[in-house]
Length: 446
Image (cartoon, rainbow, N blue to C red):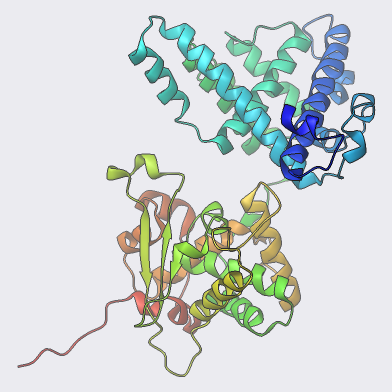
């Protein structure tokens, strides 16, 4: 950083590192302002632990990240770096904010683990490090934001966040219900960092009590009475995915081709959204016998898989001679165009947002809108629909549940619970995608 500042009076030769400093410095200051000003107001207003409804707008709101992404504070304007500022996008700010919050969670979680464990020495420190590394940065950022949210509530009501009592957690649930901006399913994720931090500090888990269970049940019933159940995410039919593949293959728009190719890859690879958006040219190969091979170098569940081996699959060439092998053709073209752009090593499907699910959902819905496809009544298509659609299609062509689970990199229980529509029927398009994976009868010599 000092080296970059020293260059300010001359020609700047390393612009990107300086930009990163600018982004981080601005985001940190904006986050500091949010924490200090908003939480100070909360502390002054919340003179009693009763949760007055007129305080609801003062809590950390979902749109606070908009403040972080605008570097317009007087601190920044007066900085010697201000005249070299490049406007930062929301996506850049989200990445910076996510990294800052994840680092804060790791730091505080490590401190809690170390204090609770006691002792000293290399083995004790290593154990603390390993327990902290059980959460990847993506999850750590989510937990860090959730823990800040809980601490803000506790400061407002003069409650102890660590250890927190079951009554405090119950009131936190009630407060989120009063705000009306959190669904019951999201509320459960809000409690995860509370549980994790208490376990790290070796305090009893305040979330695992009858009081909290009753509060959550009441929250769910109240939400359903007012809003009704949310639309059901359903599996994308193979026929629709094949139409998207055709649109991607024929579209003259390179951006649309790339986005829809990612959607098709998501469907037939049956992988997580992050796995698809992390693919590089080196992760895909096209053997001489046709088809394609692909690998998932790093996935969410690697630590749970014996041996820690990466996932690698072979997707054979289509057995249909009169139907274009669109999945393979699309990936071959994406890799070729990527390499012509001399971007080897970078991702095949670059996405600005930090949330892969949101990215693929947006791309999918763009394609569906062009095709004029709408989901069934009461249902919705999202990125989850791609993976569940692929798993469902593979099952309908004759693959056993164990084979589908192996291909998708999940347990049979997860597959049957969340990713397979047991009532779906086979279609020609399902065979176009996955008939190649079904063992074929062979004739042996007499």
